[in-house]
Image (cartoon, rainbow, N blue to C red; front, side, top):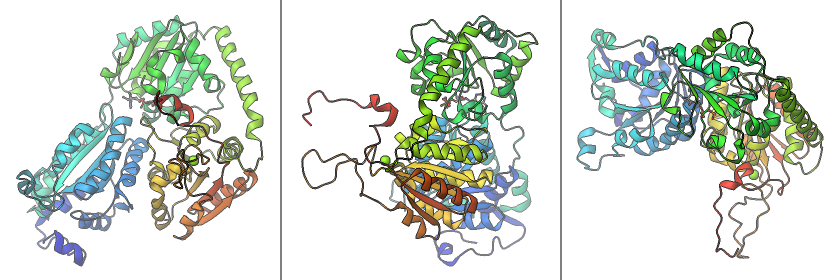
Length: 581
Ligand code: ADP
Ligand code: MG
């Protein structure tokens, strides 16, 4: 058979004529299925259109997006949710590059993902003779992912897929690029030899047991702590060691802080949650145990004002040995997979582990109560136009009543307020912008969350953030997914009230169309649109939308002056010392 440009115009042909032969298309499908990879997030086009068709024909779920970046974000978060590599498939050069942002994002966030891209012919690319969509994709991908492989021969497909899977999920998970030149797809080989060339990966993410002396060292540091705190990161959520992590926190009696995507690992209402007293817990602690959380910018690199002057010792559990001492000295590194490390610590704690001194836990509790009391009335306001707190007070109640709902969240103020206001009750239910704080993950993550978990999804989106992936509402409608998108519409980036400093007629750089009707976008594709201006209306609309199990978009009008510049990270904006405006 031929599988290049001609066959794309005419639809899929009969798979492979002689029974005794197989080809690149079918070997890829067989290799993925053999390894239990049955869902593909893709955008069709040359040279992978037929590959997608054959995949669907072979019973795989192939979801087609409107832009590769969103297919990529979907694959990345699917990896986080399932501990299996999420697969994104794209066309060559431009499609590949569109998918690459998500691959880099997956690697940065430690999500297992495989980006499969079709590519042009090596002979032409390497001589730079100007092939259709010519690009040395392998070289471009390499610095942005954990591993990058190119397959030139059909008989290597089995090994290549196995390597890609193992690279993505073993050790610290991350993104892997798999380059498939167009000619490979139609290469044939004997079916029996082909079947024999496939590899079912045994134990793709082997347990990594911590050294016993490392566990003892960590326990000794913890035991002497006067003001200990545990920080749970998204690595802890990824590890799916939920019961042991909860047991460790409860047995130790140590207050814990969840990083954004670790919220719900223990319910946010847990008595040991120190989240509402975060500043105090970080500043005044004397021992900090990090579980699957890096001391990167999100934790102020472990130093400075955030952490205060009190002398501190750090215990860190991570699968990646090089993470230790990356920002500050780690007194007790525990290297291994979180499941194994946490169960070793639990075993080592024995039955008479001392709880932390009560002056410390009482101090945290007092602060927590007073912060929560201060917040409560703001969440109950029914102001029109809505502010973030009024709107989120409503969503907070809805999430408490529907704890299985997956919350996708992006924006600036919308992200910061939602993270702190909405309690999570179950693990891996909060999916947000991750380590880069990237805008654009919204619809891709919402789609993957619905597809992978089968639960309803509530996507709480800033209007700017939503714009990055808004066209994927068509995808949501096409697959009839139970996704309710709430756009917090304050008419701009950070807020909608900026003015053009020149006095000219162009809108200010951060401002969008006034009174934009995002709800009409989803109506164009058959979904349900809602326009709401008060918390009461918002509550009614979200409940109705989630109950329907249908695609919906709620345009929630927020006071255009309610936001602040860059939300809580305005300090990262450089300031000009000479500009006049
Ligand atoms: P957060 O942003 O929530 O603090 P990070 O992404 O900074 O989380 O950190 C996640 C950490 O978890 C990474 O250092 C990664 O190596 C680690 N990690 C991921 N999966 C595992 C696992 N199964 N076992 C141990 N560590 C893991
Ligand atoms: Mg906005």
